[in-house]
Length: 580
Image (tube, rainbow, N blue to C red; front, top):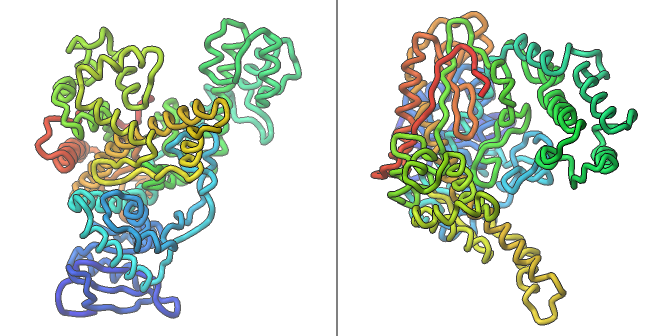
């Protein structure tokens, strides 16, 4: 390796003959050294380079390269994930000329991981099941160097390049954190999980048989509906049976069923809840996902178009509240948990510079602050109104409260109303740091145009207006949800670096399951949009709590310098995560 100038960038890629190439670049991206290594030599080479120069590591995608480093006990402070950054740059409105990025179609491939089935309960922000195909970006060194050059040029020439650089850094840090979360795992108490399942479902049944309490619930439903052979897991059959009992629902959703007073409703809702628990997090889930006292989900940073994370296995983002007590610290360690209070509304207040909204949430619960300001009478009304403002609610309580918010928080409401109007016109919007919403599909644009032609069919204009409103609701929330995700990534990134500075400790019993890096030091163990859990030695728990608070303050200052908006935390230190 060159003994000349210290590298600012170290690019890792596939070399020749099955070897791994390592290329050093200076601050201008000029090559100052390179070598090829046997795969087994990579971890040692990265460790030495990291200790000597702490460069920014560049690779095709983090899961491909970082997992093997973590397994060897090696971590890096910073990286530039080419796959994640390519997605941002090819869509960002801040990039003045993205043609070269868009033309590099090989980098449009999705992460080479099996994605979970997300067709049930999908929303505008969910991963599209049709995109869950096997893929993968180029991993060879020449392709990595060429893509890095394209990306750096695009960032340098971008409007508000400093914001875009923050986004790039935060997104890449998220890639590192996701890999580290998987490597460390979530400490999981299988006995407690089994106790919860037994309490809700009955003892673990023999394979192929339903649990006893589900059988009992199903029998109550069948008896109440007068159909002893009814297949409760068949929505069409269940719907017909409900109609025969004069329960006139259009679907079997909880929200419709709870509107009716009938002996079948309570046991049916109970059965549906039991069925979801068994299917999503039952004994088969334990067998597949929990090993050596650790649950290791696979997180997908940027898996949702707004920048929110998704998961490609294990359902880390959908763990039901009743299972939270199964999150249990190792002996002599603690779980330090923190939730951000009203993250998305606070992000909206900060990005819109709405002084009145900032004041309503200053140092206290934002919804209670709205009540204290005399805008609404109850906290529930305030919550419903704010969520209506964020998601485009126009009926019921939302429709009644949102006009009051528009009057009292004009800057915040102007921002989301403007984003909605842009979406309805077919435009794109951007988050605070520069992630932009996807452009509408050609079919949508054509339908909007043809609906207003003289020979358009009856009802076509109404369908077009409804479709435009749907897109407006999407862009309205995109700017807020995406900015909140950027704040959360900045919080995580600062916290990760702070925890890495903690003194290592002697591994506790069972801590070896966290792997060679995290068995001896405080580390992030869980992340869910606006919540983190740190697994820390008991004597470092208070310091970890301080680090969490300081990282949240730092994220606010980084994204919104000079803003009065604060991001207060609900923070607890426990041995076992409480049911939330």
